[in-house]
Length: 131
Image 1 (spheres, rainbow, N blue to C red):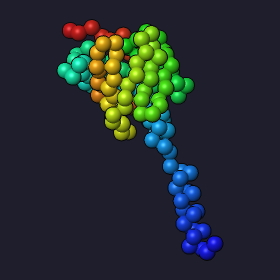
Image 2: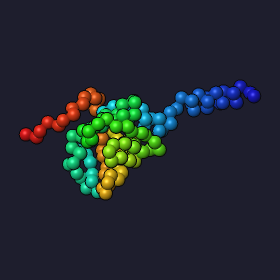
Image 3: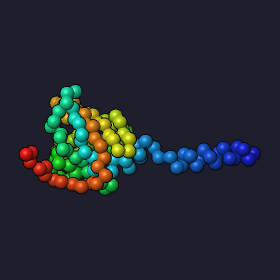
Image 4: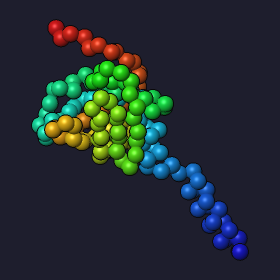
C-alpha cells in the first residue's frame, strides 16, 4: 500500500474512533440538572410543569420534583425512558449542550417539554410557596 493510501486509512480510523455516536452524546450530555422553562399539554401552553426539574445522574437514576423517588432512566434511539410509577417515554426532538426539547404521550395527554441545563445543579425538593 502506498503512503497516501496508508495516510487516508489512518485518518479515517482516527476520525471514527474519536467520534462519539449521537446516542453517546445524548447519554453524556443529559447528565446534570435540567429545568423545564416551558411545557405544552395537548399542543397548548401549560403551567403544570412550572419550576419542574430533572436531575440525571451517571448511574442511570433521575431525581425530579415531578415524582417522589429517584428512578431509573435510559437514553436509547433518540428516546428518553423514565421508569417512574407511570413510565414516561419521550422523543428527543432537539438537543444541544444546554437546551433540550422532548415530546411524548403520558397517560392520555401529548406533552412537550422545553428545558435548559442548570449549571448550579442545586436541588430544591420542595417548591417555595407563591407570594
